[in-house]
Amino acid sequence: MRRPRLAVWGVHAALVLGALAAMLPMLWMVSASLMPSGEASTFPPRLFPRTVTFVHYGELFTRLNLGRGLANSAFVSLVVTAVSLVINSMAGYAFAKLRFRGRDQAFKLLVTGLVIPVQVSMLPLFLLMKNLHLINTYAGVIIPSLASIFGIFLIRQYAQSVPDELLDAARIDGAGELRIYFSIVVPVIRPILATLAIWTFLTTWNDFMWPLIVLSDESRYTLPVALASLVGEHVQDTELMMAGSVLTIFPVLLVFLVLQRYYVEGVMMGSVKG
Amino acid sequence: MSLAGGATDVMGEAAAAPPPARKKRVGRASLETTNAAGWMFLAPALILIGIFFLLPVVASLLLSVSDFDIYAVGDPSNARFVGAANYGRLLHSADFWVALRNTFYFALVGGPLTVAASLGAALLVNTKLARFKGFFRTVYFIPFVTTLVAVAIVWRYLYHPRYGLINYALGAAGLHGADWLGDPRWALPAIIVMSVWKNFGYNMLIFIAGLQSIPGELYEAAELDGAGPVRRFRHVTVPMLGPTLLFVAVITLIGYFQLFAEPYVMTQGGPLRSTTSVVLLMYEEGFRWWRMGYAAALAFVLFIVMLLWTFIQARVQRWSTS
Image 1 (cartoon, rainbow over the protein chains, first blue to last red):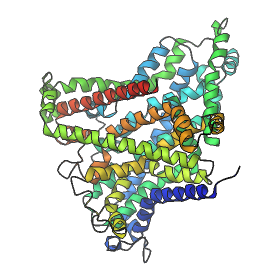
Image 2 (image 1 turned 120 degrees about the vertical axis):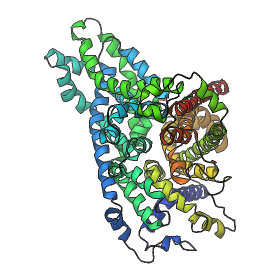
Image 3 (image 1 turned 180 degrees about the vertical axis):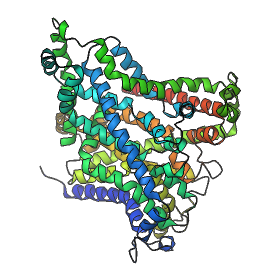
Image 4 (image 1 turned 60 degrees about the horizontal axis):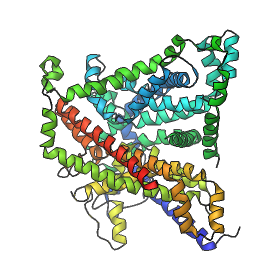
């Protein structure tokens, strides 16, 4: 097919402009984090550092102890991802493939919950956590994130494609339901488990409001909460704040770039369902 | 593209699965799973969601008709039933109306802008003329996966009236910048621009999936009938994309009604409350002043507004397509 040359140029010019707009804030963030103190607050503003320094990254770990926030975020995100994967996939599989009384009613009730904004639950949830003595603990951050209606929904859609013959054959051979699940179902639904794992990790890592509410001790702050708490004190310290932002964003970006195929599939799949 | 292909494959299989399952049902009673096994698989998820989500939602309704405050946080027996008093106070509170107005402003301006930007990006990335589609798609998607708190901090500096890149670029173009986050007229629009930047990539992926599910024959037929690119877009793309458009509009608006971290980090709701959203107000009332009954009423009003809005959107969509 003949392609009008002008149109091709126009499309690519627009694509490159869009890419610049998307990446410029991030590029400046990295660039400013490498500038010597004060250089990011000069006029006219500088796009690139005159001399590159990593001193602010050092400060993040020595003076501000953001290393602790990094460890907290990693711990919370990994625990949530690992445990919730088992919990949500078992439920999603049961909704898709096991036949038992009350299943469809339970599913309907659950899906109704999707329309309720999570903020509605937060005030009583805080009081509940207080009574359970889970305020200012990792458990207080982790436990409410372990089950996800969206996660169950995603697994259910995918697990419907597991052939019944496979499951029945195993049942005839006398395998128990748990055994069938772990040795037959899990390998078959591995792609969607990968999708849910990365989705859960990114969401938990980036979560802000609930950790902000439940954590009061700085040593337990997750990275976004720790970073937000620095904003007031270090407004003038542009380079330092940019280094902190890079530290917060870098791990999720790495996870995303390595595993983006799964994540992107999940977004598209979740959307087709409505 | 392989990505959408994967998604449609799954869809195809999922859609095809039920009929054989139903056919097989006769004479397999012995293979039916027991009720106990089914509920055992559901139990962990249902217990967690029940205790840590659904129960608190119901409790929130009770909270909203009580005068639960700092004394009740210490000892719940200090809370009393006050009927609709919290809701009545809301209606007479200037802060509430400002927050509601700001939230609607944010959602009704930011929502359409986000949808337009994502549709534009999707069309651009998806066009036959474009090369390096995967690269551009990834680049456009990156802002969405980044941590909101961190990028909000970055944008605070980009918006700096003197040292910020945005005013510098405007100056270079001969325009006069403003104190974006310090001016009550500009603070919310500035947050909207950042939010569009942050979120459009997500909807873009959904639109790409939608675009790729439109049969190519439709375009070929339209082209044979002599329709140019604009008419093909209006008469093929837009109608075929209808359900996707509704879905994207609904989830974007739902997300935007919950505005919180951006004003919390960038402006603390100021200047002059110009960026205080309903959720930010709920956070302040509930967790800073411990007026939990009042804050719960706020949360419920937000919920009702969101429900009504979703309902209206779906209705308008149905009405405009029929």
